[in-house]
Length: 599
View 1 (cartoon, rainbow, N blue to C red):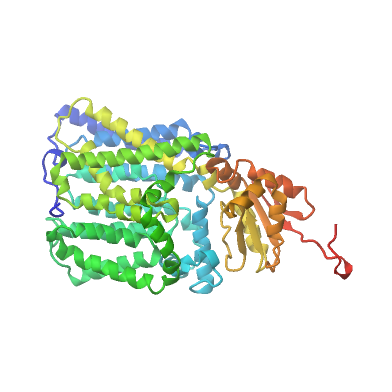
View 2 (view 1 turned 60 degrees about the horizontal axis):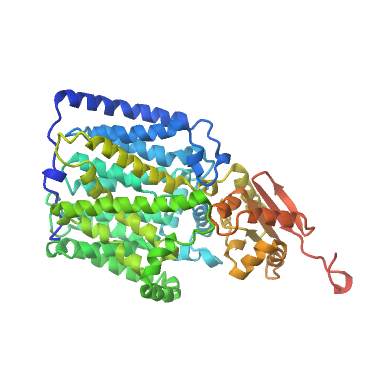
């Protein structure tokens, strides 16, 4: 690797020879016609979707055939479009935007609120920081957000500037919005690598067709990832021979912009700055790149070190032991995110293998492109592809590092895959178009399985949302909220005032006792003398779905807990719907003279 250069315009990455006039007319008509039909089919397919019928394959089981026809048309029309030597930019953009909408706006249109319990947790953090005008006291397990508050404080500023009382409204649409905003940095990065519009738009389409990790919801990770990609795009663009100053230094204005972007990343998320440092370090290996990359790398290292040794010092110090253990066991970091599927639902075992196959296929395409075209090896793409590897070996990140590594490698992998699928001169062999269509459709299938197969637990009905609203509105400070799993739409609301206990996070022995005889375990937790207010137990449809899908607890655990507490006089149902029930614990009343409790 000798530097970051624009791919030379020939063979795999160059402009195509024009097809024959007659073929070109047919291809153009098909490409123009497929897009509006696909969009119409997608919108029509969303009518009457029965979310309550989802089981172990989530949305895939309830979306009608028209939805899948829309995806197939988008993929086929886009492949046909890129047969043209110079595909119209507006039409290519239309296909990419339609894919973003069909994949990521579908839940926003179907669900009454954000998907993922994590998105609701982050809404609770924004609300708490808004109430406290900064760091949240008594945060306990959520104190990590006080140490990386950038994303949350930005949302607080937005709420104050707009007069909104909650981020809930726009958080519901955060996934399509985040993916839409990512398109800018992707195009900026890809256009710095090639002049061929087929590869620029093909790389973007392939990115959205293979981004199945699901880290684009309302979260610091999604925000920091956007800024990470924009920072790298600006650096790679400056390295490009077509950039403003190839391999040169930085003017004050652009460098200050980079400092702002890096500072926002460093203050918002603990992992993304390390990924950025790794990518910049690998980009700086070629000597010709160092004048451009080293100042940015130095800024990223300095800002990260400053933050981690001051504001985030408590978290970093408390987790140094885990980091040391991870460095000594890199194999466990690689495997931790895909283990423990023995008790999962059969559909989820299939999904796990499909996720691995999709990731392997994308990386195989990327590696094949690098091996078959040495010009690509002279760009910054190998560095961007390999950047997550040091972090993958150094930190398990709660069992998610292998998925995060795929996410951060995906922009480079998508562009490299596009050089194989959409590059080259025409006329192409007769088999090229159907094989490319089949490949894109297979990758889209992997995307849908990875992204939407757990929707039975990721979406929350209006009844479940109302149950949490009830507790948040009525529980006095010092109360305790108990649930079987953490899968609640806002179970962390007022987390500075209400203590949260998740039965599925108890010790292994306590979990075994919970499964065999739930009432004593639940009663003991809710009768904790350290709790100064009432204790509530909330049981929901989504918690039952999580047990059935993931095997964190045996399927049916929520029903067994419900049956046990419903028969006990110590539990009073205060909110009941088919999807959610809230019990208030009634502690034993001391007998006169303090002699025992009431029967």
